[in-house]
Image (cartoon, rainbow, N blue to C red; front, top):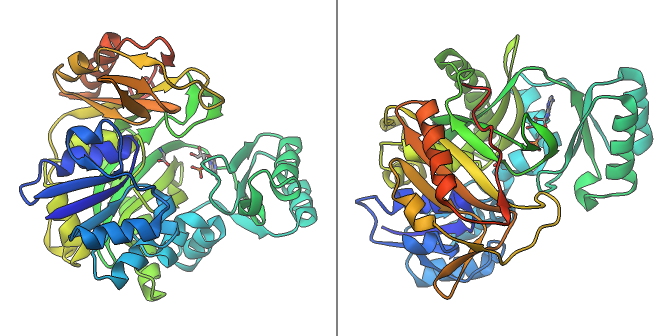
Amino acid sequence: MRVLIIGSGGREHALAWSIAQSPLLTKLYVAPGNPGTAQVAENVAIRTTNIGGLVEFAVEHKIDLVIPGPEAPLVAGIADALAEKNIPCFGPSAAAAALEGSKTFTKQIADAANIPTATWAGFTHALEAHEYIEATGAPIVIKADGLAAGKGVVVATTPEEAHQAITDIMEDKIHGQAGARVVIEECLIGEEISIFALCDGETALFCGAAADHKRVGENDTGPNTGGMGAIFNPPWATPEIIDESMAKIIRPALAEMSRRGTPFKGFLFAGLMVTAQGPKLIEYNVRFGDPECETVLPMLKSDLLSLLKAATEGRLATVGLEWHPGSSATVVMCAKGYPGAYATGSEIHGLDEAATQQGVHIFHAGTMAEQGGILANGGRVLAVNATGPDLRAALSRAYGAIATIAWEDGFCRRDIGKRAL
Ligand code: AMP
Ligand code: GLY
């Protein structure tokens, strides 16, 4: 098969690394890719939002399967545009991608399908939102309706913070049109997990659970980021919790989307809170998580490409998934200053040596290659994954690899997985 992966982060390097091992693969492209994907595939200089350019490339190069990594091309309709050319795409249509693109839509689906989630109200007028906050008090969660680069959610601990969030989002429009509507919801208490399902429109197959570490600082302090590290199957994701989540949160959403005539195909990612009343939905994403993807895929024993092929052919009900024993952890190395302003262009040494260590996989996220060397070129720069017989071993291997990477302008959290241990 000739495959095109879309994206340039650590998630796409992990997808490319996994798919490159498939016996079904004959040629792998990544657009635009990074120096890591260049080790296992051919990079193509087309931006992830250039839908026309990507479709044209897929047609010209006789691509058999397109795998979009990030949400932006999905929300922009890449799956629909490829369908017009009869090119299979493992990802949802623009209509089904609304599960991530609009928080109001997510809550409406949850209500229609009786999916456990935080109680909520939607607003298009700031005054009414302020009144609702006055009436309910805090803690309370304020969410811009549209995509806001992961920065659209404010967990307000006081009414003042909640009012400020409404002012910022609805009146000062800090996220532009994404904040024209807001969802205000109950603050859920518990432990978070990300669960992943492969979906073919009708059938959902469980494809791993992970715990992300969203805050930039140790002990979960400081601002939110795209994710500073992840661990595979955290102890609070028990088999019972996974089964309940698949039964009450993933499968009903799939059935509701199908009932509406917009079946969901692709990776369905549910962010959940494991509360005293069981798992409750925080949000859906219509793609794999990052750095969760880099954490889950090294544990997958089954051939990913044949699974994705089965999904695009509507055959998921006939296949199963196998896992390697043990555990997996990923620590993200970031440029100093992230998630605020950071410098690019500093040199990173020791990557080859780190990559040869037992169980270690170095996934590139924001790097560039120059004169044989690797330079930092983003906020999240490297996702350092390791597998091992258990979580403690995986973490110790990941931090061991980090110790051999020499990068003065980088940092990472030293406490990934600490709560799980
Ligand atoms: P999101 O940008 O939707 O991933 O949300 C960012 C983070 O906000 C989540 O990972 C949660 O930690 C937190 N969050 C979102 N909704 C809620 C909620 N209803 N209750 C508690 N925390 C929440
Ligand atoms: N790591 C969380 C996400 O990919 O949205």
